[in-house]
Amino acid sequence: MESIGFVNVLLLLGALLIVAGIFSSLIASRFGAPLLLVFLIIGMLAGEDGPGGLVFNDYQLAYLIGSLALAVILFDGGLRTRLASFHGVLAPSAVLATAGVLLTAIVTGLFAMVVTDLSLLQGMLIGSVVASTDAAAVFFLLRTGGLRLKQRVDSTLQTESATNDPVAVLLTIVLVEALLGDGLSAPDLAGMLVRQAIFGVGLGLAGGIAVSVLLNKVSLPNGLHPLFVVSSAVLIYALTALLGGSGFLAVYLSGLVLGNRPMRAFANITSFHDAATWLCQIMMFIVLGLLVTPSQLLEYAIPALAIALWLMFVARPVAVWSCLTPFGFSRRQKTFISWVGLRGAVSIFLAAIPMLTGLPAAPAYFNIAFFVVLVSLIVQGWSIRPVAKRLDMALPDIGPAVRRVELDLPGQLQHEIVGYPIAADTAVLDRGAVPRWARPVLVVRGGEILDPAVAAALRPGDYAYYLAPPQRVHRLDRLFASAGGRVDRESLGEFSLRGDVAVKELQEMYGLEMTAGQSTLGELFENPLQDEPEVGDRLPLGSATLVVRELEHGRVVRVGLQFEDLGGAETERAPATRLERLLGLKQRPWKSSLPESARDT
Image (cartoon, rainbow, N blue to C red; front, side, top):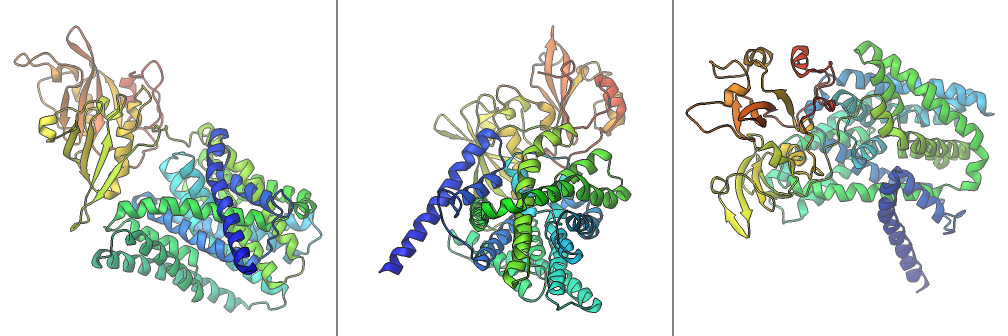
């Protein structure tokens, strides 16, 4: 009976820690603290040196929990990544994930040898343990923080962090075996690296295709689709790792394949993974916090702090600038990518390998790695947003999260039904329409179900439902989000133009289909056979649309230029300096906010 009571106590403590982690997210959001740091601190407070007093030193169990959590997190990262985002970043990301990790390990390892009493091999082991950027930390902090980065920078960071673990794992294993006296030969090293890459890529791609085929062919009971997908992700990770491949790389690629193929129950799967990713992050970092003993951590504080600062300000920038300069990245881009080299759970798990193998000085590796991760989350994790804005790497905020209803359509995979409530300050009321690939299905108004043609223009209080491709649904969110009383039309893909801009100028810029006979944009809306133009009148121009935004004495003095494919890949430079001259603007990023003097408010 005592053993049963002990199990119940463990369940109670575990549940309390997870609940504390969930509610701590509210505090973290209030003060802008990195959530992963909060989860880590909760684990430390519950540990043997904290008020909780729990003694936990089972490195094998911690490694198991961490591996499971990382598999789910990396799979979710791939699931939400569009293949189009890889355009132009595969080569630089691959160089950064291989040569960049090796260079980071060497520069950090040499410094670690200097500031500690460790040998060259031992210093290199520390460098290898903390060399890789942690994908879980990057994915989680960027997404939960609501930070939208420019396309090239965002794709480079996510691709690099998701694919750089094999090199770090290989370096760590090689150095551990060398310190144990079981050094590997050069052919063995080459074979291990090739096996990690081949099995990681091959099983990841094959696993993703197999899961998507099974998901679409087999009729599962409602609610089991998300469970099938997440268990398949763990299966792919474990099988690849057992065969000597990179399980982390395989599970990311399988998620990437699955997220870019037609998939049944896509809405349910992504919703489930939202919760699963949160749970995995909470569990993983709380367990890591329990594993560390703060009193022992303080013994290594000075050299560990020196190594952490060296890694952030010297080693990581040296690697990034050396690897990305040949690919034409700007100074600001390289500076920001250098700063977002977050260290996280992977470094702590790699540091647990010496503990599991009984390597001499193993506590030093673990405590130094833990301290480096702690400093990285505090310094880099807390400063990502201001640094991104300072270096002009952040895109405009798109407002708070929108309420959305998603319904799968049995029998086909190309579309789903999505519904949005229409608030008084919803951006779609200002824009006047949605992209053409979102087809209106019905409108609920005053308790009645109306045909879209009968409902006509949307009104506050309506509920609008659309048929849309699952991969594009997220692009609608900014249109249906509450604008807080003010619509930033440029962030919605609309540019404000004067009514006296020449039609010829716009035709030359974009090759738009425009009616002949009018000399200015305002005159396009003026027809003596029709009523006077009104604010909100629309004129389709092929892939774009003109919308009347301001009138003076019946004449159009301000129009909005909208493009059909809302929320696509952001262009970092404006399409034409002549258009900027017409707007009275200097050349600037296409998606950045207009100055107050030119902004249409």
